[in-house]
Amino acid sequence: MIASDLAGANLSLGFPLSGATTRALVRAALDEDRAFEDVTTLATVPADAQGRAAIVARSAGVIAGLPLAMTAFETMSRDVTVHVVSGDGEHVGAGGVVAEVAGPWRALLSAERVALNFVQRLSGVATLTARYVEAVRGTAARIYDTRKTTPTFRALEKYAVRCGGGVNHRADLADAVLIKDNHLAALGGDIALAVRRAREAGRPGICVEVECDDVAQVDAALAAGADVILLDNMSLDAMRACVGRVAGRVPLEASGGVTLERVRAIAETGVDRISVGALTHSTTALDLGLDYRPL
Image 1 (cartoon, rainbow, N blue to C red):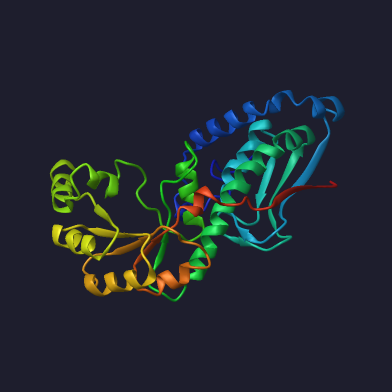
Image 2 (image 1 turned 60 degrees about the vertical axis):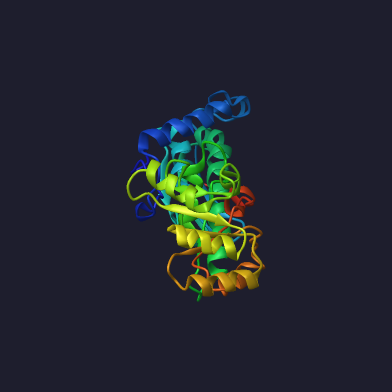
């Protein structure tokens, strides 16, 4: 039996789901796969057969989502035991063992795909985030995520970003104000009016960020009292100019067209934050496998 509801979680990273919610989500995934009706396993594997296996990294990366994977095995059978080797937020090399499981052979086989789906997807997010974080190392810029997440999986994907060393942007539309070009279009481009309305309608202390396309808008947002200014799809020269004009009075965030090849140059303009939608919308799953071993 798993020793903890959050086996493999680094609690300092704030695993976002309670034990009960984790179990419910995993059970839904197992039911989707009809794991309890696994005709192949039920037909070929004796009910009393015991086995053990290890989740092994086929390529190097950062682990995230292990509590979900471990819960999948436990949900199939309370007789499964788990040993976590590399928990969430830890780097693992190619060939490295992430976790070991042992128990009824049927449970291990039927839970395998669901377990790997969870940890591969979230580890992919963590691994890509870590690459961006490493790319800007030595600069003042920090890597942020966006709301470009898989529907209903946002909390988990943002947790995976934290596992990779990134920082979470606003959690949802109610978490902070972000005035974008389409909001300004409804107000004739009046940034001062938009910021004032946000202050009046929002809760006390809420962060108000304004998306700007050029230096003139940056000046207007600064004069209006924005808490954060987002530089949207600006050239490197324009970013440097904005950094000079703002002179540290509010944080500057760069966004749009950010790639691993370009992120270092963006960071070296002097911006404080770089938001990267690709962390969650274009990640590749980390290659992990379940290797069965003799008892």
